[in-house]
Image (cartoon, rainbow, N blue to C red):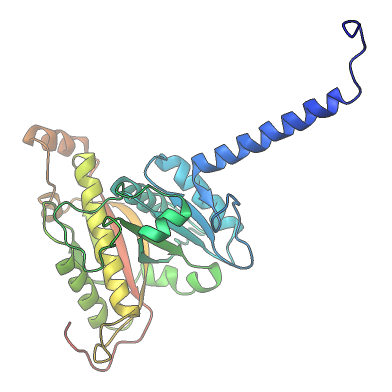
Length: 307
């Protein structure tokens, strides 16, 4: 009878293999949960000199995204880090996480470029299925994706060798003008044109900025932050891919910061919520804004053509 037989010598190896398989599966599921990927796989580090890729879809909390971006940025300082973002909530979380990043003990903020990412790119990375992307209700995007109108953003944190040069000085440069994102259903294209115009006109040594308040209902904060991203990404696209050769372009990079504000004009742009909600916010003293500093990468153009 086999009932009293000694255990097979291969049993421990079978159990060990099964345990290793479960461990690998758990690691893969954990990697999916935190949203890491390089290329189309689940590797957390850049390969072949390419930037590491971090996915943010709004399901992760701010602390997790900030911690993982900090790790990737430290591990890939020579390659940089690309953050692929989907959904309005994802944009707000990613922007706030980037605003709180620092490259070293000196407190140098990372600089980045912001571009649009369309449905095929998002799907290839494993982000939200078709129809789950976020775009402003009633908004007509001049570059709308044909596959359901779904698009997000690629925020490219630049390698330390290029990003650190002048970033601290530029972030402390005099700000020529601050543009502000209003609430409501206003389209983002006029703001994008204003961003492009301000960057083109900046005197050498100056920067510009565009910001929105973090006060108000969450869904309204997400909408304003998404509009901010749309405007900056569209302005970036106009600089790197102008509609015709007559347009003078001026490339720019960005730095994000979250700061305290007492600007009554900006406070008046808060939309949504009852007056009681706004009064409660005002009493809290926690009036913060999310600001993108626009840093020209080219000298002031000798001639400009209006868009």
